Amino acid sequence: MPSLSPSPTRHTELVDQAVARLSPRWTTWTLQTIQHHSPMRLADINSALPWIGVHAMAQIVRRRQTSGLLDRPQFGVYDLTLLGRDARSVHRVLSDWHRTHLADDAASLAEAERVEDALGRLRGKGAIPLLHALAQYGPLPNGALRSEAALATGSFHYRITQLQTDRLITRTSPLSGRGSEYTLTSASRGLTPVYAELAEFARRALPAAARPDQHVATAQQAVRASAAVRRSPAAAAELFSHVSAPQPRVPAYVTALSHPSRTR
Image (cartoon, rainbow, N blue to C red):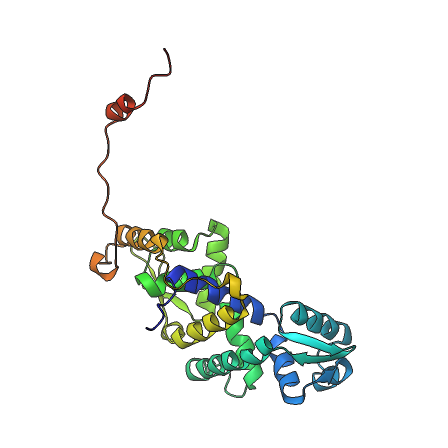
């Protein structure tokens, strides 16, 4: 029997975790360099990547060791862990996405730079939840989108501006107003295989005891779908499964009568 897909919320969390692990600057260059020449001494890594300073490279390999991507089999020598080698499939799909959707911006970039640029567009608090909300519920106005991403007003506007600059979202109207909504660009809609690869990478990074039970139903998914239906007039209830029906309001005097008396 095939395993069930994780809930949309859990899928978003896994993608966010993978981006956070893989997106720090020079991570892709470091992993791919060691992949081709492993194992490598720190001095040899520096020679292969001369534009990175000696002290900066020492910090990079230590942090990637902490994040589980690198191992140090002997003093001063680094090699990829199994998880670090698994990053290769993520790099490949990110590079393919970048070449397909952003080729006019960077026709001559190396693969590692394509990957780092793609991860840079997905990095940052709220980026993945915002893209996920638009992918699930379609065009959304400011308030509904900010609520879905659970961002403070300042953080929301900063991230929205950045995602527009990175050509991942756009306005349905060029001017800000009551009828203006945000929607995904064609490049962003092409991220589906990227999300799948990132989520799988994050699942492999989890210890066995922490891996989610794929067969547990999530009530939160139904609540979020119902909220999106209420907020977006263009959304139809039949698009979402298990949308909870609104409960009738109980008059205050009935509620008061149901409480026991506080006095004897």
